[in-house]
Image (cartoon, rainbow, N blue to C red; front, side):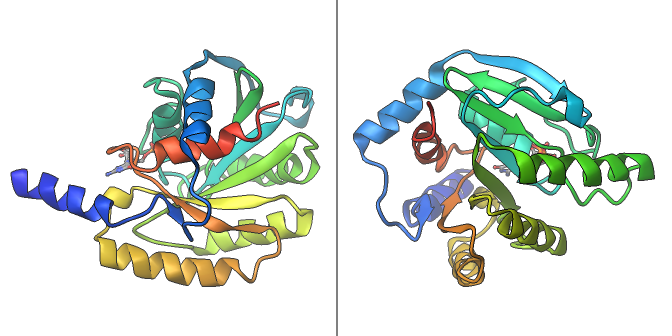
Length: 230
Ligand code: GDP
């Protein structure tokens, strides 16, 4: 157990939370992120149909990814609230887009994709609602594309990247569960992903490296999101 904790520390000390590590957020940006995420996070609506999408009056950042990528865990780690987004291993809530208002920033939790066992009806409504949201949302400042550090890009992610490129929605990769991957393997995966991202016109070159379990990269991600708050 002790060995494991030490190995994990060593691994994280050798990693930067941002790849490539150009300009890492300074202390003021980290503090702005901390302050923003210390605000009350207010549930706004769970939209199951286009007509239920709220007016986009606040700047928005949206969280996308395969189901089970660690999206609920990341949202909980960012906001420090354990029950904010339901943590679940089962592909359940596949139909709703959930909006949370955090002071002057809207956090948008999109249903996960790649859920082989989901009923056809649910997959159908995902295919309708999520692209509609992604393509037509004026307030959407940045899409965060969550990728499991153990797997890298998968077919569903690539399809979604294509959609975001075509819609000219700026997106950035956030690697989740980095505590589960040895540092050397993670570095190689990040290098391969960065090379692939360079070919995507709407992709941000920096990759956020995070772990909801150890908290690695969470202050830096908060800092980067705080820059979008109105
Ligand atoms: P979602 O379906 O994308 O919302 O994924 P969840 O947040 O429910 O996480 C899926 C599984 O991955 C759960 O068993 C989590 O405990 C686990 N998990 C999520 N984030 C991390 C992480 O940073 N590290 C580790 N080791 N496990 C994680």
